[in-house]
Amino acid sequence: MTTSIEIVELRTLADLNSLYQLASECTFTKEQYRTPLRPYRLIKAEASCQYQKHGRRCAQLHQHGYVVELHDASQVLIGNCCALNHLGLDDEQVRGQFKRLSATERQNIRRHRVETLLSQRQSLIERVRAANSKHRELQGRASAVLSSLPQRIGELLNNRWKSNALGISWDYQVVKKGVDEKGKPYEERHWYPHSFGTLKGLGVWLQLGGQRYQERLFEMRKRLEAIPTKSRLNTAELESAEAALNDMTELAVIERELHAQTTLLNDFLDPGNLQLTVQLVSSHQARADTVKAVHHLLGQSLDVSPSQYVAAIDLAFKQRYSTGAIRIAS
Image (cartoon, rainbow, N blue to C red; front, side, top):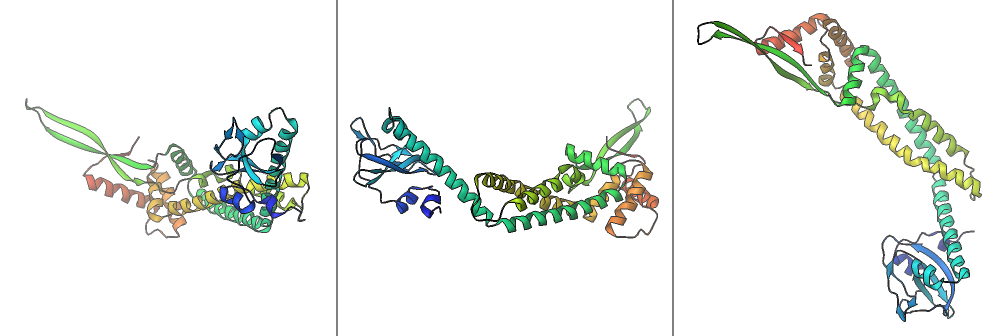
């Protein structure tokens, strides 16, 4: 069995000191060297190389190095550069020892990480199931919204989301009449913009089917469930398990995205925001159809016909600016 000293990943100088009785004041030469004990890769360069070269201690602070044992059983540190390029210079046996030790260490760390994560396999499978359930719920709600709205409105919402054109504006015309300095009457017509507001809540939910979330979640669950439940995996099983567990990074991304899209859909369905969709097109009939859809989504009844509802919006707009002409902004 792998012991704790073999599987702990050494990340700090404190880790090294907790596992080894390091003779930190010692400086050693190749003649004193007996065998390497373990490689390490620290978070920062804080280990001091104790190898003697050119008549003095190297003392280079490093991240990557080795714990080695001397003939007198002292345990000391040597940086990777000195280990391979000085201690191991012209000595393939020494260089081979360091390289084999590094390969074994990487495999032990890899195995430990995978087998630790596998202890959480069932909870990971439950997370995939929960994400799949949330995806189905979101897809159902998004489909219900898009099928209720006129197709043209759905297309416009998708286009506006992609182009980040979220403002809803119409123009109103102001007619100025008067007499010029020559006594001739004139009439000037100018268009001015009016903002009805900015659409909220548009996002990936508008085209959720194209994201392949369901397929990816199914693949994740299938790979997790295929991992053997035994405590010690062989090399092939380890590689398969590692690939499955690497999917968990993507799972976290999907979980965040589903949560974000659910929030966006809720924002879109806010009554004030939903009413803005009525102003996305200029056609009176299309706007009336949108009014009907909006009230259906809100679970509200109409006191007047959809056509009268649109006419009331236009009348209020015209009265606000004392104008007889309005148009959707181009």
